[in-house]
Amino acid sequence: MNRSLPASFVILLSTSALFADDSKAIPKPAASSAREPLAKSVSLEKAGSYLDGAVMAWTREQRCASCHTTYPYLMGRAAAGDPRAPALREMRAFLENRVANWDGRTKADRLPDGSEGVTEVVATAAALAFDDARSAGKLHPLTRQALDRMWTLQNDDGAWDWNKHDLPPLEYDEYYGAVFAAMGVGLAPEGYAQSDGAQRGIVKLRRYFADNPPPNLHHKAWLLFASLRLEGLMTNPQRGKTIGELLALQRDDGGWNLPFLGPWNRLDGSSNDIHGPSDGYATAFIVYVLRQTGMSADTRPVQRGLAWLRTHQRESGRWFTRSLNADGNHYLTNAGTAFALLALEGIE
Image 1 (cartoon, one colour):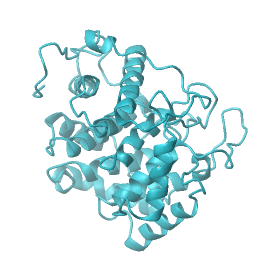
Image 2 (cartoon, rainbow, N blue to C red):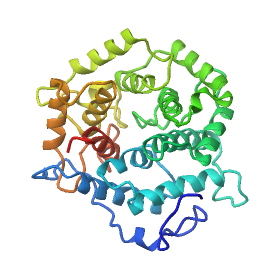
Image 3 (cartoon, rainbow, N blue to C red):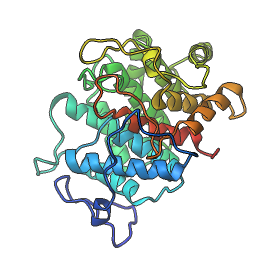
Image 4 (cartoon, helix red, strand yellow):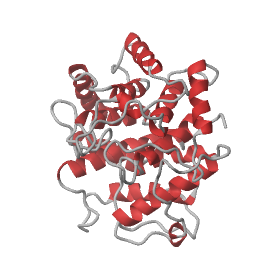
């Protein structure tokens, strides 16, 4: 690793190694609940601390990265105002170590077989690229290695064998994997998207999006986000139409509701409640994307969305999002909290 860390900070030598002692001191948050009281005032620091606990608990217990917690964490945690938070640097080191040891001798470190391994490569490459763009503005050698590895796993149709575990919206279909990859490639610093190693894969990726319209508005919003940094994914009229579709779904309270963004059923076969309350993930992600399109915080829709975020943080620091699958851990709350930090960055 060529990132400098304090002497007290322990870099993982393998995913089977123990975490640093200071990370063990970060408590695991209580399970997410819609009944948790609202905070009296918004606190980005408290949100960062909540995410530290959530991501460290997940990684200590599961020994893997996750679409709902780890990758959004790496993308959003620095927006809490502490880009050198110990847990953030440990998670960065964890992912870098994964990349460095995907072909290692230790079985526990090697890339899993099948879609699990493919998904790990794509998600890790994209999240590291996002972090590189936000932090140093330079492409870390291990990020480049992950991105280059990603193209070797790309299918002929331009997508990847993404995890499809009936866990919408992140582990449900190949489209999300493709658009997450596009986001990372577009944001990767130092002109990575123009490099010889990326060009052939990007041609296939653009063809995939041309041949496969977004299956729902959630994925369409992600395509909008990716298209802002990677050319050839959306035309300006298509971006404008997508923005209009998102704005049309803004509620009277200023928020958005995730079930309205896609026709997903719960694991028991029942429908998600499109008339349910606005939630943290949908509201934060859409506000963040709108801001990325150039909408200022002074525009009425963004103002209203930001107002919802300011008044709906919970006492623990998180923004609650009900799971689309089952009323258990509500892990989308973690992704929503990370995007809330990004949406509020530079404003609070």
